[in-house]
Amino acid sequence: MSETVSLSLGGSYVVAPDNPRKTKNRGRKCMILAFEINDEELDIRVIYLDTSREVLLKFSDLKPITE
Image 1 (tube, rainbow, N blue to C red):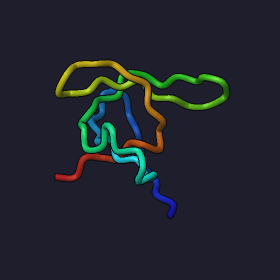
Image 2 (cartoon, rainbow, N blue to C red):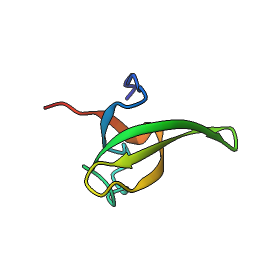
Image 3 (cartoon, one colour):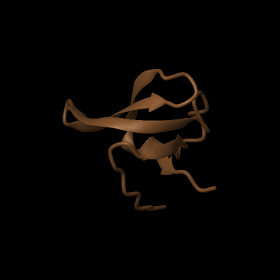
Image 4 (cartoon, helix red, strand yellow):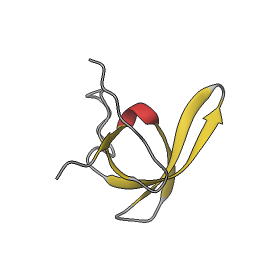
């Protein structure tokens, strides 16, 4: 399945990995702080809105918040 998501700095997203085994942070809301290239891969630095903790995520793990 191919889905297009437009990511922007300061935007709010929800962690929703396509891999069903990735359940640890599924459903958590976050805000994008920066885009980083590590080892030729695009990572996204986000801050979780519930704990204010900064982490690196893969861009494919983020989905727009639909309420």
